[in-house]
Image (cartoon, rainbow, N blue to C red; front, side, top):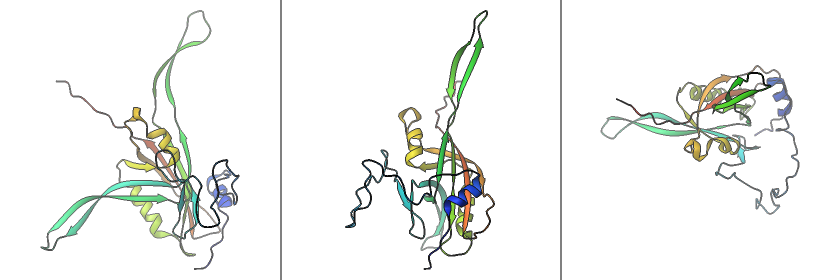
Length: 220
C-alpha cells in the first residue's frame, strides 16, 4: 500500500479555525510513561483508571492518542434454518478516528441582591449536563474519499438514542457514583466542515451532552 502523506495539524487549523498540539510529530516525554521498548515490549501506560485505552489505530495501522469509542444498539434481522425472520438487538462499536475532545460544564446559580449591602447571595441550583465536543478526521485507506465511514458516522447520528462513550477524558466526568456510573451521551449536532487540497481526509465535528438516568416515581 502506498504511503499517504498529509499535514493533520494544518488540516485541523484549516477545518476548525485554531491550532492544536494533538498532531505534533513528537510528543514531549512524560515522566513514568515510557516509549515502546526496542525489543518489542511496550511499557508505557496503556489505559486510564476506568480501563479506556490511551492509544488506538486507524484502518491504515497508524497510531493515534486517546481514541473515542461510541457504542450503540441496533436491530439485526437474521433468517433461521426454517426460514423464519428473527430480530435481535446487537451492540456495535464505532471508534472515532483522530479525535480531539473537549468537555464543558455549567452551573445554574441564582443570585439575589442584598438591600444596602454589596454583592449577592448565591444559591447553587445544580450542575448542568456535560457538553462534549469531538473534532477529528476520517481518513480513507487509499487516495479516495472515505464515503463508507462518513455514511457510518451519519447513521450513528441518526439513531436518535443515547449512546455509550468510552474515552479516558470523558470517563473522569461521567463514570462516577453520583451519576450511577452512566457513560450515556446523546449526539446533538454533527458537522462536516469544508476542507480543500485533500480528498481522502474528511474532518468531522460531533457535539454531545451527557444523559444521566433518573428514576421517576408516580404519585397517585
